[in-house]
Image (tube, rainbow, N blue to C red; front, top):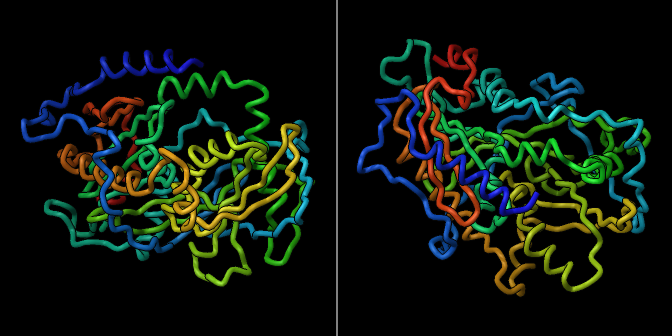
Amino acid sequence: MRMDQKRSDREEFSNKKRHRADDTSSARMTASQPQVLSVQRYLYEKDFPLYKQPIEIGFFSLDSQRRFYNDDRQLRYYVEAESSPNFNLRDGYRDRYIKRDESIKEKLDHMLQWILENRGKVEMAPKVEGASASSRHLKFDFVTWRGHLTKILTTPYETHEGWLLAVTLFQGTHYISEVETEAARREREDRSARHEEMTYWGYKFEQYMCADEPGGRPDSGGTVNTNEAYCTVVQTRLTDHHLLFSGEVDCKDNGSPLKTAPGCYIELKTSLEICNPKQQSNFLRFKLLKWWAQSFLPGVPRIVAGFRNNSGYVVSTQTYETGKISQMIKAEQNCWRPTVCMNFCAEFLSFIKKVVILDDPRVVYLFSWDPFKDVCYSVHRDSEYSFLPNWYVEEMR
């Protein structure tokens, strides 16, 4: 879809929704509340903000039917590839592929289920005024998915895709859940056959690189089922924002000198082989930005990339240390800067704290952003954007 059409659709959405309260009179904005947040890069070219080393405090698994298990049964183990692997990423696409239904929006449900089953692992603060005697709220400013934070980090350099993030303040904690934009929905529904198959290629590469048991061998003849997942849960702090978030992990390296998670985890990626300077520049400027953000946030130290040809065969692999990616891009002119990404993320979280004033699980503050625009928001009560389920709210009260 052409970028100008996407932009037009998103502008129409923003004009309808911007700063509108849906029957939420008590949430009317005051003069002291900021109305928008600028995304201009120069505002965030400051010293790198404080970001504490992420600590894994738990994990969970999702099985072939997306059922939640409070254990590591879906954890896989890294197996190093040969120097010339020749992996056929197209193998099994037609007859050994079970794809997760992307139209089902799970929101934060699995993360919330983990919280309820691991109260002893999650730091709790004293009960809030007016709460029940057994109520203790989370000692975190934000609960979300790693993928949502990745979108925020890369926003200053994103030129094609906007986003919608729903935020609800409940017992002192801000919960952030993504809302699918109309443009993203159309893109998902209108994907070409080639695009669908290339999406499979990334999962197939993981199958070639992972074993089910430590010391085992990959089973490349098995079924690729994208319902299955192993997720880490980490806590960290960005400036004065205490974060609890979860993200999917591809595999664990049993041979890593860093034995404790997340230092022993590896992120697996695929990319078109680099054959000329322009491809190298695009790789550094665009692909590495998202790879870095995705791995830096949870503290995953290594990314193993499989470089493929146009026929879908992996011809080589290369390992990138997440902490050294910022050095790799320094020679590239007008390239992205990690400090801009992290400072913008910190400022956006501060913006949320200033704007989101109603502590009510039925109220959603919907933050909206389009490329080359400011971040704006609207307020909604009992709307289609509500995402905290009753089973969670009642259990936490």
